[in-house]
Amino acid sequence: MEVATGTLRVKKERFLGIPLDDIHPEDLDDTLASLLKKDGVCPVVFLNLWDLLKARRNMEFRAWVENAALVIPISKGILRGARFLKKKISHRYYPFDVVIRLLRILEEKGHSLYLLGGKLPYLQQAEKNLKQTFPGLRLVGRYPGYYPLQVEGDILLAMRKASPHCVLLGSGLKGKERWAQRKREALPSSIVIFSPETFDIISGKRIRPSRETVEKGREHIPELFRHPWRVFRGVFYLYYLLLLVVYRIRKL
Image (cartoon, rainbow, N blue to C red; front, side, top):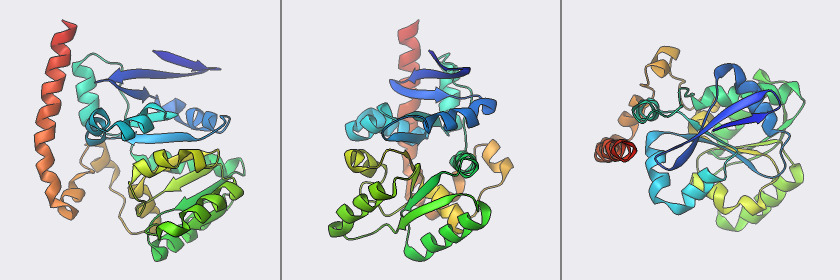
């Protein structure tokens, strides 16, 4: 299905029952800018293969994906599977690149950003780096993650009072990406993005992978060294292949 917004067309597909948006690179900026015209919370979800499988089994996370303004595939495995099922999903993006393009749009329009997540030293460095790179971007608030539960109400109140156009979420939130789903009613009307990896790159905690590494789909390899237990996810990828075969047979 293609959804038209003015001259902008975004292809929406369901892949293994999960919604995905296929955005041509030349339409990405306009697609992101169009979110600023919407009312309410506008989640932008970056979906890798693991998250896609999680959305099939975890109803809370699936609700976040189903109600997202954009669900952007970031995994080559999703694109390969989509081709196997003859779905029109041909573009994936690296989350950092999308966030940077959104920040440029916010700066050009004189719009605002709120940062929530990470440990305080890295959060402070992220703020410093953003001010240097995007001097026209208005940073209207920040708060580190890993905070005590009793201050959460004050954080959410401060966010609503700041009324940012975009909220960028990093690590240290209870429930990770599901935090935003649980707090949706308390969040300000804004674009909401959960991307700890992007947060870490902006703060300098993590090195941005090379363009070649991203294009070859190898950006996840360093994560295996940091979190070696993830190698056991291979079992779920076998399950993914089985799902693809089952869905393909159903269409025959």
